[in-house]
Amino acid sequence: MIEMEELETASYEMKLVFPYDFVGEDPVDWAYLKIQYDMNPDIFLDKRNPSWHPGGRVPDAWKYAEIYQLCRQAGLDPGLPDYRFVVISVSVRAGIDLEAWLSGFNTTNVDQDVVGIRVEENEDFSRLTLMKPPVTVTSFIVEDQDAAAEGFPDVPLSPAGWRFLVEALTPMLRDAAMDGGLIEAAETSGLAFISEIFEASGYDEVVFVD
Image (cartoon, rainbow, N blue to C red; front, side):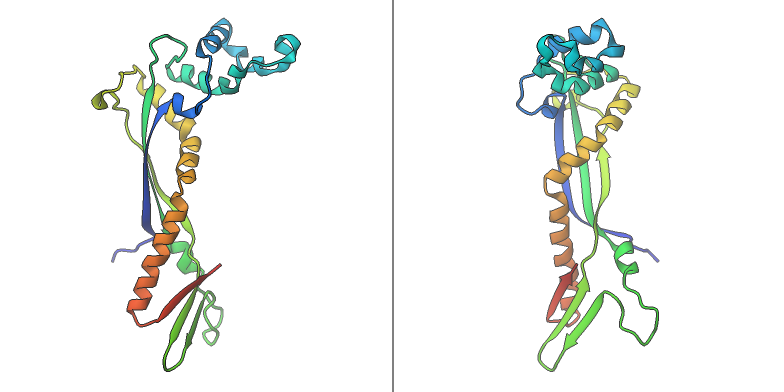
């Protein structure tokens, strides 16, 4: 017997060019950051402090100092004139957490109504009211690096450098997927699917409540 714990109802595919898609449209003086990093990597991020700069004015380039340091730690240097970059392909799926949802339908007494569900019916109409199911990310996959196959410059990242980069960027990649409306789409599709099932079983209306 197969037990379903999750119901995938939406997916989101994206390709991001690192580091350029992570700085928006802001101009970044990568060459300046390279000079500062090469002088002493150990104190590189400390130089974001206003006390390091004349008049206490921190140059705009320091806004992306962490991104630049991440590049260098992974084996990529956007401060070089050849404009090398890494293409990151991400596949994210979301849906209904069936296990968590079903566990919420409970009662401590067989004579009591089940918590989270209510049935209203008469001779002409029937309504089923259910607690709204929780929506969650069911799958988050960063595909293996294969930029050359897509016609992009081949960045010589080592396997360790690639793993380091993916692990460091995962929180930002998740945020990017969420900003794309993935959770909202998964909820809309999931509620429609559940409604169809119960309406097919005879209910005229299915309502979800928080």
